[in-house]
Image 1 (cartoon, rainbow, N blue to C red):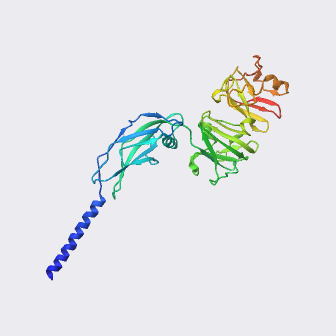
Image 2: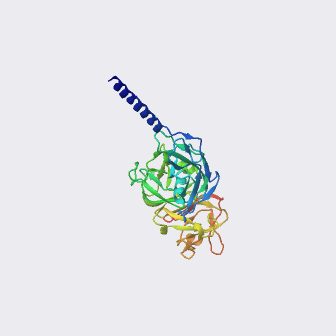
Image 3: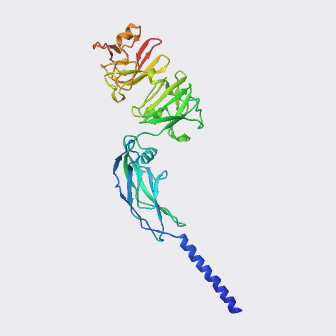
Length: 372
């Protein structure tokens, strides 16, 4: 009996030792050394093209990461803002190989989310995260490279506030500003109250107020002002109603015009930013900011002439009707002293004030033309 008892104790002790040894093997899969990205090299660049969204935006290769226990390694390509700590990294793709590519459209979106500037070369940081399925295994990261990307398009933005009654000061139904070629736009019914622009829906910390755009050099339509309400939001001060709201990040303008583009007039001429040309949207929209009141904020060139056109068909629109200096003079308009008859054969309007950002307004109700 004593011998049998000793044998049982020995078996129990042996099984306990074996069990501990197996648990220890499950808990440890230690990485050995480090691994690096082979291609591309830091500083390499790419220009992304909207016409080829399925083309590779970046193709990467990297070294194997060695773990003490043979196991399958998963590699994840991560992108983060340049110079950041990857705390807000985006995972672009995962693989068990040591190579991967990311399509242009996916890379483009990631770069814009990371704060890249559309149509300008923007640096972003790229690294590879290695993980295994072994219990207790910690992620290992490759070196970081900086990749230079010229992205296209832009991200949509949002607006909320009492000045936009359909939205109000909550995130239940924010106004969505749709982006196209770096121009954000929406049709919106404004009230005489305050509102604010946001880059991310639901995130109050991403707000952009009136002074933000002023500091960035934007020209803002006369039917908006600083609300001076503590947060310095936008306040709509025009006639309440439906407007075409546009934030043009190319021209750095913010406008709100009534009706459709067919309700606007257009300014063309050497005194205007686009010169005597309709190509490339050079013409300046002279839109309705209130009933009967047309306004354009633009840099006007001293000593040069321009003309007001009544239509725009998307191309050269010289034959869609226009108005020169004698038209307004003959119809009893009071014309600003900085505007004269150009006497250039077409009797265009000559601007004689200083070169600079001016507000050109025609009030067709009071029949007053002013430059402020």
